[in-house]
Length: 313
Ligand code: HEM
Image (cartoon, rainbow, N blue to C red; front, top):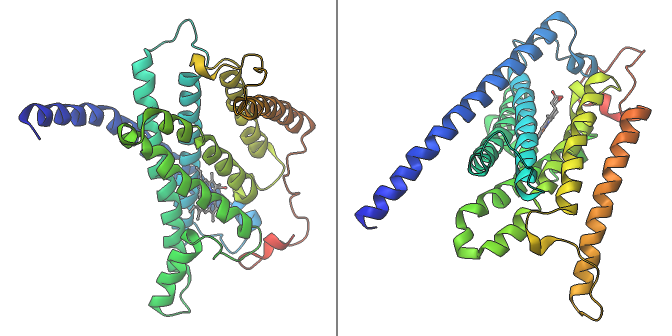
């Protein structure tokens, strides 16, 4: 590397540190606040996690599980933010933005890296809790369970988790290549990168689906679950706008060209994408207004006393 190139990349590194540090700090603060809230609710007996799994009635014992949940929420919040920023950048350009496009781009890059770290921390704290919990087996098996249940797809074999955990793993494992490809875009080509990067929306959908299916704090059909559904409306609306009015001219959907061979299936695929996004917006409104959001009823009989019993309901 020449001295000039070295100086330039060092300068970039220093500059990026200025955005990464405040963002990472904000993520830690938000996680700590959520952790404190979950802890207080567990101690006061108001925790929905305890309503679902009454054996978890001691925050001091289950603090790693609470921390995993807290990282889950900050991961989802950061994923929400970074997806919104990405859609703002690739959709119709608003006439006036409070900050420049370069700043938005920098925020998008930074928040996406933070999201990946938070997702990983969420799974890691779940792994740590499993190792702590499995006291009846030897250390080798404890470590194996701690690794395999959260990280090996298909290994977790209990109740709703059989579907919910692979959804979360899918989100984590897809987020890493789709996010990091940006840093090798000059090798794979900007177009290939752009084509692959748009599938990052799948990461977000998997994350929300995983949460709705498995989050005990949104387990019941009550307001926290409604808020989670509601938060998806702006994402879906912005996705629809982005598809209808993409910033890049080449992505706009003109009338289908007659006899254009391979261009026709692509046109139909892109038109179908717009219809699906519109249907999602309508579907979300119906879910929120009708309150049919997949939430379970709070149990009237004594709840489960052992891990995973509640999942067979
Ligand atoms: C290897 C991947 C993952 C594993 C093993 C995993 C594991 C879990 C488990 C066991 C729960 C249930 C916690 C509870 O009792 O509420 C959960 C909930 C949750 N997960 Fe994940 N997850 C993964 C990926 C993700 C990703 C990628 C996100 C989001 C970006 C996410 C966000 C959440 C949220 C928000 C909750 C709800 C927590 C609560 O209700 O308090 N997870 N996850």
